[in-house]
Image (cartoon, rainbow, N blue to C red; front, side):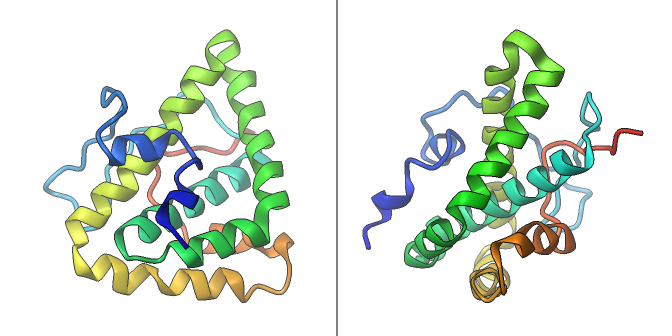
Length: 171
């Protein structure tokens, strides 16, 4: 399959190709271990379903960057096809988080988050070099081997992905 089949996924892809506003990009600090970003706290807490959606979005972003960096577009496309209903439901949950917390600027903030998330994954890929592919291509096998789409959030929460913000649970 051609790589272009995965490009309409998120606005975050744009920055990977230098086409998006870089103002919201997180900055990795040199004192951190390779492969990790120093994320500031998110301005708003998240409910449990929102945290699950955030984790799945992180996983999806990591897999997207893995596909682009590691010649794994066919595996990414298989992931998207298998989990399309789950990913769509999680996208609605994530959109609700941004509407609840940002009101009229929800879409802009959501877009900025998706871009920052993709940038974080790309930065990690750059830091890790070839190790990034070695450590992440196997995630496709893991997710495609899950018994049901309902297990995707559990997998994502068990294998946390660096986020541009540290999201706290609402109490």
